[in-house]
Image 1: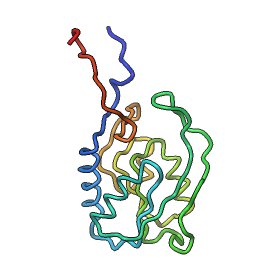
Image 2 (image 1 turned 120 degrees about the vertical axis):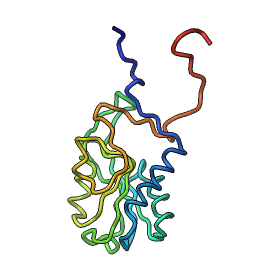
Image 3 (image 1 turned 60 degrees about the vertical axis):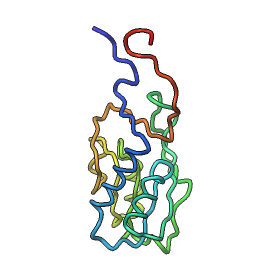
Length: 166
């Protein structure tokens, strides 16, 4: 039996796929008069931009929380640290605010944001089972042990065929 290569449990997301999935997220969120979108930096910025465009939301802010240390499959979550938060006047308790991120993994980041803004609506493009209870709306669920390779983390390069030399 062959050992699994690190990338084989990966889910590779292209810019086109991310755009389609963020639009699908928008469709699921339609019907509410959102006061603002708050993007969780950095991964939530691209989906939040697409959602804001699709739902014609002009007020956009960001929240920045550092949690991951390391790169790729070696990454792990460390101590959560709020680096930047949205305008307090805008946010209040989160009522009418849509918080958008690319992925909920363990749920720790969104749990911290929920403590800050308990009435906000949390939406992610992708969700893993452990963090799934932290979001009200998402598009695609992936297994907990899947690593998602987002387009902003990737570069185009030649990949040798699985079998053979060319």
